[in-house]
Length: 404
Picture 1 (cartoon, rainbow, N blue to C red):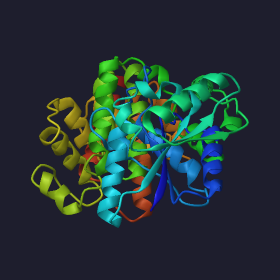
Picture 2 (cartoon, one colour):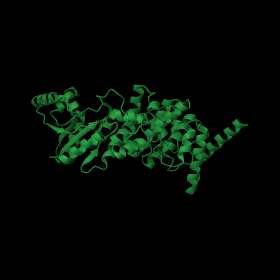
Picture 3 (cartoon, rainbow, N blue to C red):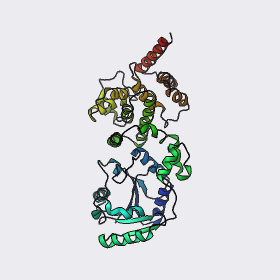
Picture 4 (spheres, helix red, strand yellow):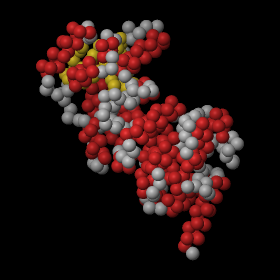
């Protein structure tokens, strides 16, 4: 019988204590698979959790160098509604039965703090009859209570409970987030790849800007992320989050609606990974001089309107023109165009001056950004799209008129 262990958590972000726990379990040699599962909307967390694409990426980066049969699953991320553990376990059992002809034996890897409250989990009585528990003891306190609860659970549900005793690492995701939000280093608390990712892509740098949204708006944005998750590859999922956060930051700088910036930034590439034939079918008659490199932009605009029911024309227009710009581009459109080109996941050396100008003058940043686009196209023997040329000329003419 296949034996797997499921390790769920918010992983906001995935840190060295998480990694050591996974490596300890792997060293036991008793599991065919170790599956790490970042949560979707969690019933057990009262605070706002970061977007799934970021949390998934930190787990992926931490574990991509791990030896053995460790994988990261998006099962709970894509589950609509609240991701309850009992549903996840049953889904895994059904999938394995269909694929291999028999259900796997499943253990849950949890902390001792979770053991103490596990009977408060949704349908815990059914869950504890479906799984065994592998419990990592956190800290030295509450030992008597932990043993008492474990014995009670064994008698009540006939659940197997095994303990892992580890030297405690004084690491918390809350501490890491606080350091990164404050602009401090947290390298000593994170796997190298995770630290580099969070720092270079400024994942927590725009927390103040993103805090303008209500809990309801935050949940809606996370729902939009969930809806487009199956349509994008992981690199694109991170990119759209970077664009969203940067766009909100710029919107607040330039008195543009941050909500429109968030939605347009998050969804601007929703059609990017669709087959090209589907992209063209979405917008063949609604955009001049279409080609493979830019078709996803108008296709995404049509998709968010037709499939997601987003009728805000400012948002749809910003998405439509985010690759080429347009002579009638609004400030929202400029922000999405710029954020797409200069978000901190982009590694071109020429971006710093554009970022500096974008803080104070959108038109100046647009001119500099389009100039870089022209140079890049010229190096490849290509010409700019007519909309890009017209947008450049329009801004130049407007600036000239203002100076006379």
